[in-house]
Length: 367
Length: 139
Image 1: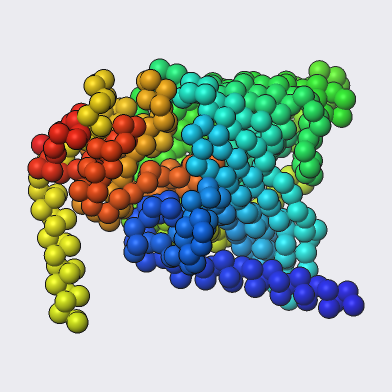
Image 2: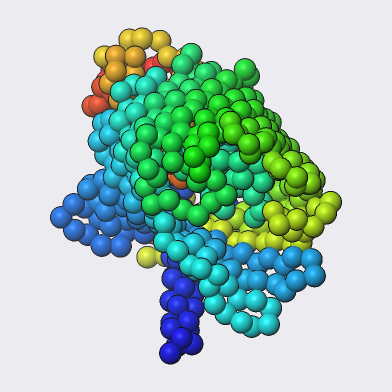
């Protein structure tokens, strides 16, 4: 009975994945560097008009979602398939993420956004054993935005905690590597359920975000840190085109102890080069001690859609844990604007529970 | 039928090339008199600036991604390579923000901007008439 159940799950997951990939590829007639437009107004060559109804046509553009006519409702999302092999261990093929965006747009100042995520759906190891490492459904984001002006936007709901840069764009199709820098997920809760005030000043040269969680987390997800109260602020400046610098302060309570985190980050883009770096330091007000970490990542466009990536990371965990140094070397290929194929090798200076040396690859698709 | 198809494709290409030869201008509704900087135009078309100074929502209108006008506009105003823009809009999509609406001809862009006081677009200079005001010109 259990085997039948597992087969059904495997079959369902593969069916969903195949459907999404076919939907993406079938709808695509675009060049690799062609920007997919809004399905509501994309030119006829790029959009698939699926049905006509009372609110207009049901239209789909790969990487920009399925728009329900003039209703303002848009469905989209992303998925990723990973293949990983730690040094000395078996290989694993994982259907890691299936995230569905539900958006409501078309209002002058109000928007609604949600991301419903199915995680760890399927894993097949190199011996042919299939199963799930604990599939789960999560409400990753659920919020409403009210834009009073460009200088003030109010967000209410569950959103990604605006610490650094990686956490707020962590989706596999948007980042250069399959693995995630430790400093972007170990020190803080990735989500906040509360209120945020944000905006841009001086023609976008300065951006701010003040946020807080005054209630329990909506649908808390298993993470390294689970915060039940928090407050923080983030400031970004753009001293010149292509360069953005950011700083974050976050105070949060986890397991009845308050922690204080400070972070600095930077991104610089110039032609075929992108450099991104983040540093954070946090300390518990009780007996937990402190930890800190950083990463520095360089991505260089080699050919039209091929990128080389190198990253160095250092992480010094709190307590008696030994500091970790890690290097990731890899490449990314973007065959279409909404698809990214990545391969990388991760080297660590010693074995640790936090990370393993080995090979990582993934195919990620925005749909 | 096949010849008609080829004729249509050639005609469309010729129109696009002709439009590309005429200087590109950025236009707003004739009722908008405030100057707009190049930087502001870029921020509007990247959806970073969503409101005019009077508080009304900005409605940027793009040409379709394959058009010559769009490529010229992006190179001059957005100062980004295509791969950068792809990454930028993918990131925005992750946050629920879509690229500006598109229209498939300069004539359609002019008619839309001429009719909507909150719109901004770009067209070939030789199509400009009294319904719109030119705020930038690329010679």
